[in-house]
Length: 519
Image 1: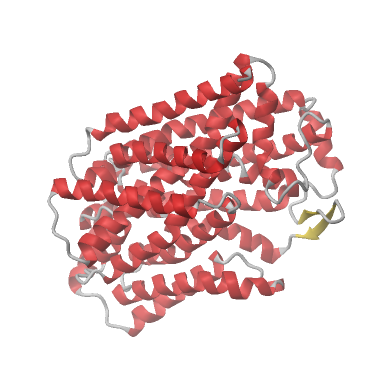
Image 2: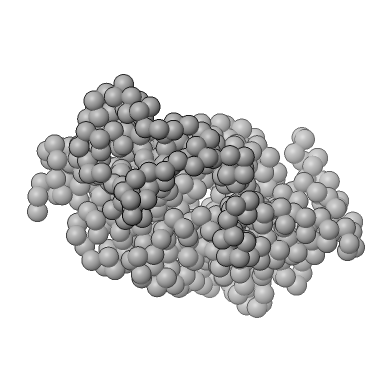
């Protein structure tokens, strides 16, 4: 084995081994399902902030965003980052504290639980519909993470895709099933540190090999409209040329709509519910917001650096090799670093571990959210299974394993598009859970039937807009999250006003939560 591959492999083995150890340590702290799925509401401000953002970013941070900037320039990557940064801040500002207090008041340990408890849905209609939505969007989302890990191992070590993908899935399943929510949250903190380290290394090494900061910026300025926020470019493989198109009001609004997704992400909202002290949420908000802005800004910069490295032939030109070739720009820079000797290969291994961290930090959270929905909301809620604490823990781990196996099956095709699935699932959660969560927290008159209507309308519109309306192009070419979110919101308002007002018990609890927040 070449010394550079050996160095990378050593770093990755140490990193993955550390994740397993963390899972084993935290397995002793899970005394019941509340601990397994919500960590006993014991997350401190740093862990809650960084685990929420690490579980959010996925491999998109070190693959998708740099690749988009490398290929298309500033417009789409920049507006996407702005939308996500705004969404992150507003979610922490408006939702985090209120959901933490409200969910503790209702005794809820999952997002579907909270919806049912909030509206006193004794028949579990709300939690059942919400749980099905989680399974519909999270199982393929988890599969995309397994697929990304498999492709990374295959690229690095020449491993057969299916073996590499199964190996990655086993590691994620192991520490998540052992340690539950606390293990996933703490590993997410470690993974956010690894991601940050990878970003810093790439920038420092990349700028040095690109000929300095001035060379990077001169190259970016020399490319027509590369730094322009209202013009984007695309590559035509048939003619081997780039073309520029305007990035006007509708594309900008459509791209900014990515930020709406935060209000409905179960794995992020669960971090809010698990915070130990709601009075420290302001600190968490500051940590999360600053990290997200810096991380995405650096990721875009890496795309620019990679473009200059291609120009001076330090790395291969990634245009036109295949549809996702530009997304390997970080991997190409890491390979270049690894060629500088064994110690450099060790450092390069941190970059590849960072890519793994992005993916694994999202996959573990998705597995827990999907598992809790199946075991707590469908098996125990809808079907009324009576389980003691020990049985509940066994079911929780068993369901997590079954869902992971389903994810492996869905990820079996190595040609599946990782980021198309991520985009669609993000829209699905944002448009279904987002409007229901906001109205549940901030509108006293909302009721159970309005919430059910919002979940269904948002879910249906995601598919309709994605597959029937958006392909029409022109003014209809809008990211499906925005129209589906608005459709769900209107449905909640109309149906809530058209049906009976919520009972006094529900409105009294709403008022009490308001008083608790002011105290």
